[in-house]
Length: 416
Ligand code: GLV
Ligand code: MN
Ligand code: MN
Image 1 (cartoon, rainbow, N blue to C red):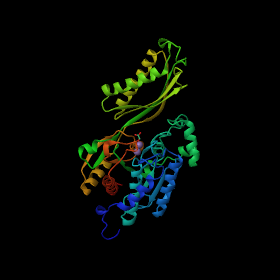
Image 2: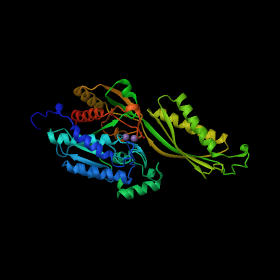
Image 3: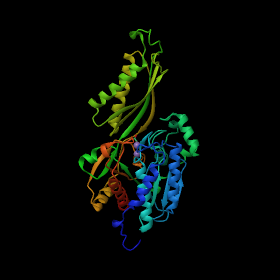
Image 4: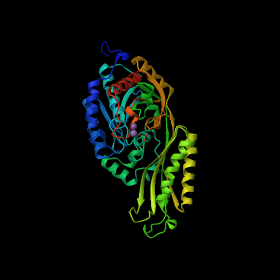
């Protein structure tokens, strides 16, 4: 380690981080501040090519596993010692923002570069990792669940984004289903996982806090529901005689919102897509396929919410003389973050003189795939206006720097 670089005084290089952030935001840019980099799309793979070059330019070793997870490795711990993962994801939701995931991957890489330059020896090696398909445009938390050995092969047959999109993405990326299932890493070799992320909500700004220490990550369940009726002439069929699938889908959407707001405080439900078939002005809709996702912070609440929403869908289908098709498409359990990681993040904030608060995450994150295997922790920074999954997503640059320095310091404070 160079003379004056005691770990407490180490800081990330703001110019280098900013120049990386700006370069990455151009890949898949939508021209309105956002990016369109769905998992394994050409833009996402271009972002990965760019990251691979940045890792090599830093003189770090890069690695890619069977799930496409791309990482930089720094041997700064004992030989054959454990590895602390730092990371996030380069994929985005369709037409999303440029901070979600990208900031965490770049801050992780920057942390490795700073440690490499200063040369402290740590109780573990470091690895900055970009997880595949965090956002669930294909499967959801795909890279982190493969790494954790939690991916059910059956899920690949009917994933959230459709089987065809998954197969096309894998082929584009040179990946295979067999490779995905072999990407598990022995938990004994990993010391933990830390991630910096934007909050994606308004709570830190409202509380005047600079850093969020995540206590737990929400559970997420997704379904495709089909309301099935009958196609008829939209001009000649009396209203009372119609088996109109749109009525069922719409009534369910309204009922879901009402019931979550009244009966499930702290939970959310979203109908994010509806496909009408045949889908014409003059045909009564025969079928509506609806994408439903709901979230709750605790397993018991998630289960109650699931039973409630599915039975409401059934009742509404009956009332409208429709059939109901139900396909379960994804399930991520709520995950508490480790107390050790939370402590390291709190100490990092003390070292940096940053005001922190503890909060739970309503967004899903790769940390929830790993949290029951080794200590996992997440650092949030304020999101202006709380906006995310939108080109309006924004965080002030000084908050991004605070977050990156907190990640660096928390890394140095983690126990081996
Ligand atoms: C991922 O960001 C999610 O919460 O859907
Ligand atoms: Mn994210
Ligand atoms: Mn996201």
